[in-house]
Image 1 (cartoon, rainbow, N blue to C red):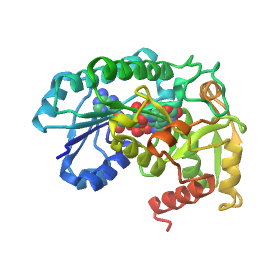
Image 2 (cartoon, protein in one colour):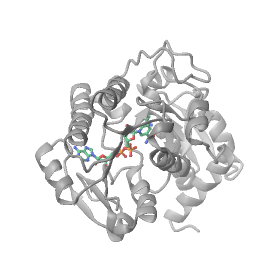
Image 3 (tube, rainbow, N blue to C red):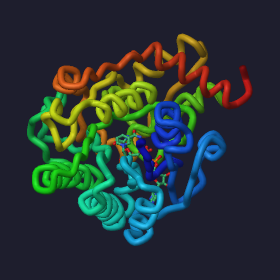
Image 4 (tube, rainbow, N blue to C red):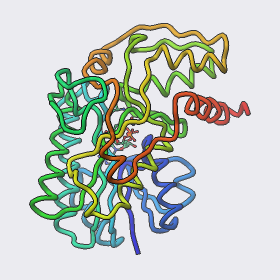
Length: 318
Ligand code: NAD
Ligand code: SER
């Protein structure tokens, strides 16, 4: 029987991934862990433990005590926050991954590890449109540098020690259940809250900044598909490109205005504009589609309806 630990379970992805995994593997078999308490839904539906992924001794104790067979390691400092404290962000992002990889190497019960990478592994010298799986990678943010180094370590641990670690280069993820965690793509989440609350939004990116994005349901499905694919079908042990949708703040605002006719957007770019300018505008994920049937179901209009309904429901408006 699988026993799964999700590290960083209180975050934007973890709060939804835990629920999806509990549906698949049974509530009692999916342990949520984080430094802080997760959502009520996560707390009420299965086990939760406060656990610092940097504390390797407690980590190994936890894994052995609960006979953990799969780890999803989601704890990290995201792009915007990482630029404020680069050395601390590097330390958290890298040391936590090394703790998990070493654990998976030493504890033979652990059969699979998931660790997310990001479109941030690409940089200003990467082709921006339809960015290929294999291409120039010269990230110039501390977050991107840590993700690229992380990908290299994952591939190394797979080749050298046989650790079955799998990864996706998530684009910006859009969801309403839990707040976004300090990234450059967070505008595409905040905009929905402000549209519903006040009918206007001041965007921290310029109107024509296209970025790859994905609705959370598609990201969770992609994660689970990747983890359930037989190991021999996977040719990539760094991280797979996953595409989703691509749009600019202006296009997203126009989509929202179809449902909230007086919606107004203004633009006041901050330090995150430079980060966004160094990232791809769209992603080629044909290899992921071929090897493990990666497919996004939400386009910009379907995602907008789901987000507006989700946020209104959260505010008790519907
Ligand atoms: P998030 O910031 O919302 O959640 C991260 C969680 O990790 C938080 O709940 C935090 O409390 C926890 N955490 C931080 N330090 C910890 C520690 N030392 N020990 C235990 N828990 C700790 O982030 P997210 O958006 O859910 O992202 C999860 C992962 O996916 C990260 O690796 C991130 O880089 C990656 N990713 C996210 C996106 C996105 O758009 N959300 C895109 C690409 C990649
Ligand atoms: N959404 C993430 C960020 O903006 C991308 O990894 O940091």
